[in-house]
Image (tube, rainbow, N blue to C red; front, side):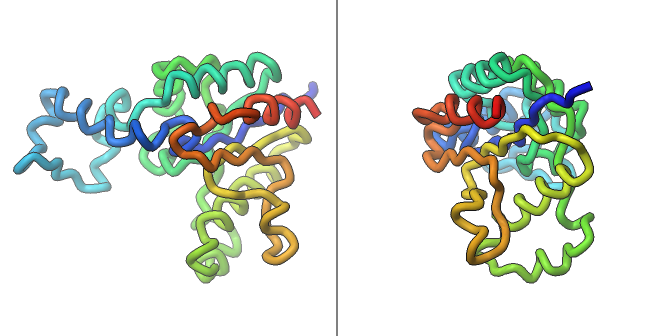
Length: 203
C-alpha cells in the first residue's frame, strides 16, 4: 500500500501567529482552577506542571484562517501531519490529536518527530553554534523520523529557515522539501505557501 504524503508541521509562526500569542493566559484566567494560581496578576506555574493544565486551555489558539489553509492542503493531497513544534514537549500525541480537532483541523497528527536529545550524536548537536542550533536540531529530528519511515513525498512547514538552499553548501544540513513562513504575523497564510506545499506533496 502506497504511503500517504507527510506534512512536518510547526505551530508558532505557522499556525499560531505572533500577534495572537499569549491568548492562553486569558483562557487560564477564565478557568476557575487556573485562576487560583495567579499571584499579583501573574501565573506561578512550574514548567513541570504545564501538563497538568487542561489541554483545551494549555496553548494559544491556531489562527482560523491558517487552519483553513492547512485543511485545503490536506484536502488536495490527503497528507498526514507529523508535529515538529516544541509544543510536543508538553503534550502527549493523544492530547495533541484532541487539540487539533478542537482547532478545526480535519486530520489529527499521526506522530511527533523525535527529540534530538534522544538521538545518536546528540552531543554534537549540543556543541552546534548557538546561532544555528535551532535549525540544525529541527532538521536532524525530521531527518531521523524520515530514516525510520518510508515516505517519498513530504514537506516541512516552519518559520525557521530549514531549506537546503540556505544551509547545505556551507553547513551540511537543510531540507529539500520545505516551505518557509518567515512572516510570523501571517504564517501559513502567506501568499503562495498553500500552492507551494501542494505542489511539493503532489510531486
